[in-house]
Image (cartoon, rainbow, N blue to C red; front, side, top):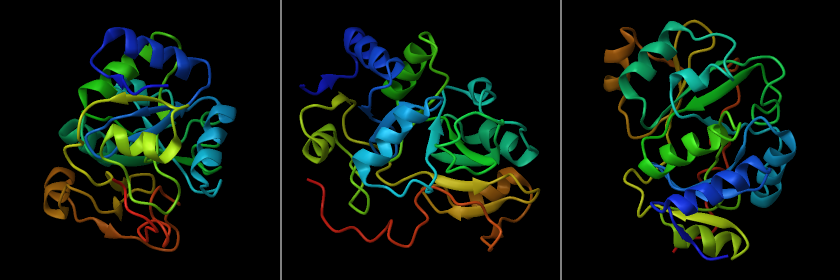
Length: 236
């Protein structure tokens, strides 16, 4: 299957239909390219884990089109999450919030919390809206590479990693090039779980309080295993 132009409405429709049917899709975000599946279908999400060779208990980030769409997955929307979303969504920050029971269980790694992000890339936004019209509330989309390898920043990297059978939308080179910042907002005080493009000072200015350090009680979060940043191969 060739890489498709993410600006082409027909390609977007084809990708949205694939997601609705439970298939995987490679999509661009402003951070890195993601390997996406509909987040409300554990069978589809399981295919992500299989394709990447990723540990099943290691949570995935769910990508949504806006804050309203996030409510399909969130049991609560704490004030730190509200502040971060208001300031940085669409953008490269993921918030961990209490998970709505019975929703996206596999994406959350079985935890009672879930990571949510609203990407700013126009192709990602267009695909999320197109998929939502087909009943897909959001997509789980870890980086589109096999587990432990460098995260891809071009469509060609994704195709090189997974071969020609994967439908990939080309949105050009990723602007940021590293994964999103992750902030745990599920336990009262915000905790920085993974650094990213946004600085601690920028986050704390919006939150109005200091970020706490990760502790033993923190939820598991995407990209925080010790092996995640120990790549075995280079992309491209």
